[in-house]
Length: 83
Image 1: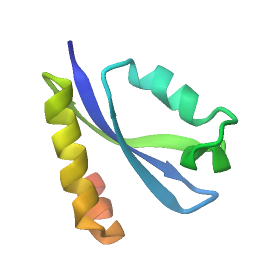
Image 2 (image 1 turned 45 degrees about the vertical axis):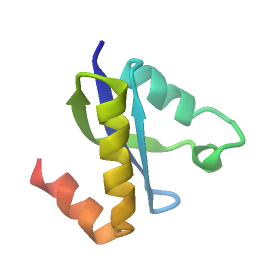
Image 3 (image 1 turned 180 degrees about the horizontal axis):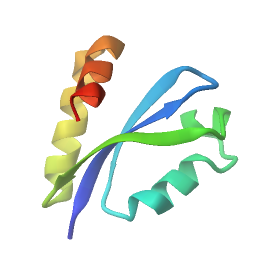
């Protein structure tokens, strides 16, 4: 089973969203862009701007927590631009 850390960006909100999934990223993105009550439900224009693949959910989640601990939009942008 392959899992991913992913970063989405909304131009409308000028915000990034970090998450992880073991589902297909395309399906997860579709869910984020649907009308729902969560954070990503505030805008329907989320696009995938970065992803990393991991062998298991635990590793993907650990990487997500690491990036979220940065609390820095600038560092997230630098990571995205490195690819």
